[in-house]
Length: 270
Image (cartoon, rainbow, N blue to C red; front, side, top):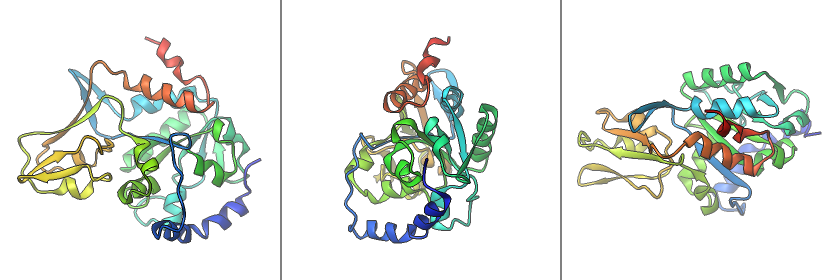
């Protein structure tokens, strides 16, 4: 059985204290691929060499459909901890896998695939960004088995702990293991006017101004889509290589990390 709601609430009372200790460098991080792995999923339309692929539901649908269990968490722990005033705190993440059934009472509720898909679509309509993440801290916080769980978070830019961690480079292990989608490329076209808006919103310091033109630092880019959203000239675009089945690659990676269901069975459906 996971942590009780009382214990969880007690821990959350000290959320900002832990964050400050982190910012001051008093908490030592040991993040690695073993305990931290995630993919940021843009909510823009991505073009794959002539075939339009609308993210994120192309990736989220098969993950949700093939998970052993799906729960909707009662709240977003990041928005609660930060006291978010811009987005609903009660709009929690999806918790996939049988470990979710061990949650303490009042922490979440088991739902059908249809309910989970509707929840995801509603979150995206509100402008929240999907993040598929397998993070040991979440399992510790809820008191459940890390090997039998996977999160689909719906992040706001103001409160998300992952986006904060990327901006502050809280550790190399954390930064390096939040991944851009495989095969995804961000491109700045000739219509760029050098306004710098993309540099301001980039969560990973992956946009630079060179000669009054925005340039993508490909090594840092996480493919979050912020730059595409804010560009006033629509000069920034994203594409996925035709040769990459992005959904299959992402799903296989998480199936290898956690036992949450036969996710990669999607590979057999054509």
